[in-house]
Amino acid sequence: MDTVTPEQRSWNMRRIKSTKTKPEQIVASYLRGCGLGYRRYNTDLPGKPDFVLSKYHTVIFVNGCFWHGHEGCKRATIPKTNTEWWIEKIQRTKARDEKAYEELHALDWRVFVIWECELGKDANFRLKELTKEILIGDEYLE
Image 1 (cartoon, helix red, strand yellow):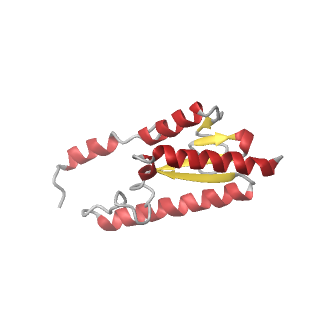
Image 2 (cartoon, one colour):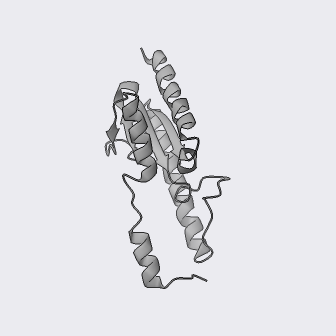
Image 3 (cartoon, one colour):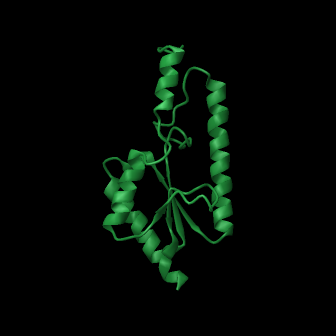
């Protein structure tokens, strides 16, 4: 049973942002600091990637663990109310993500996914790893 009223729950859900989230801001700041140019939310590409690094033919998605159903992550729990609806919603999101990744690969884009939980204490380690993958992979594009 939900511990808040439907009005309070609705108010809470409306406040959740879909763009320029804190995890995205962390990645953006890191990419800027590395001098990697990017564009945000390219609607011409499948899945509307969070970051597009055209020079490296690379896209980056920054996924929230809950909303995108990060397997094995403690943040990806299913709510105890309206459980069936949430399971279906998250499964649809995961299927949509997979379809977008496949379409991007078919267009010869390299796809990277950063999970919200990876941007905690070890964010710099994960982002350095990402940067290496982007730059090393670029050697093969020349």
